[in-house]
Amino acid sequence: MLLAPACAVVLGGCGVTVAWRFGLFNSDGRFDDVDACKLMPDAPTLAPLVSNGSREPGDSKPDGLFGWAGDARSECKWSSVPRRVDQPFRTVRVFAKTAHATTDQTGPERATEDLEIWYSNRVRRDQEVTAADVGEKGYQTIDKTSIVIVLARIDVFDIHTKFRISNVVIDVSARTHDQPNDKKKAQVTALATAVAERLKSLN
Image 1 (tube, rainbow, N blue to C red):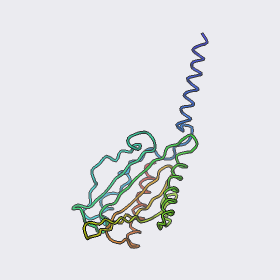
Image 2: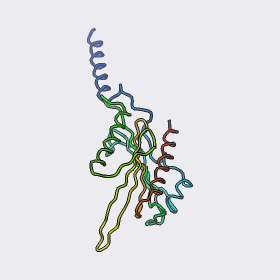
Image 3: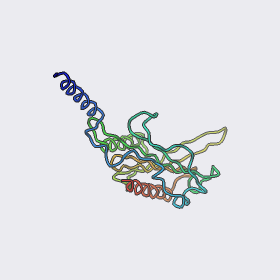
Image 4: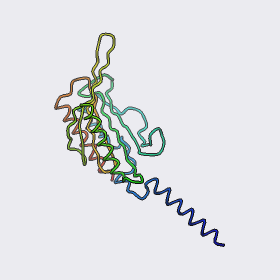
C-alpha cells in the first residue's frame, strides 16, 4: 500500500530535477520567443533606406538552432527590387535571439553574456566598435567583405547595431557597396531604435 506514495515521491523528485536542469526555476525574462518580422518597421519607414524594397521570402518563425530546442532565433530581411540597387542600402536585416533560462542563469543574464561575448570577439580582432544608445545596452560596428572576381574587387559593407533588452539580443544590420559614412551609420542606429520600440510593444 505504501508503494504508490513512494513512487509518487520518486517521480516527483525526478520531475523537480528535470525542471531544474532545464532552468524552469529561473526566469526566462520579459519576452517569449520573438519573431523578427514583427520587429521590422513598415514599408513607409523603410522606403528611405531601401529603394523599391520588399520582404525576402522565408519563414521567420522563431526556432532553436537547426530546429532543435534552445534559444530561439529568427531573421527577417527587406531588400531592393530590382536587386543590386543601393539607395542608400541594398538590404536591411533584423535578427532576434531570445535567450532561455538555464540551471544557473536567467534569460536576461544569458542575453547579456551573449552580447558581451560578441563585443569582446570584435575588439579582439581589432575591429572598431562604438557604443550605441539603443535598448538596455548596444554597440555598432561595420563588417567589410572583399570579393575578387577576375581583375575586379567588390567591397561589401554591413553596418551592425546590436543591442539587448531583457532576454532578447537584436542585431539590426544594413548592407551597402559604398563606404559607410556617418549619415549611413546614423540611419542604422535610427532603424535599430525603431526596432527596439516595436520590441517593447510586444510585452
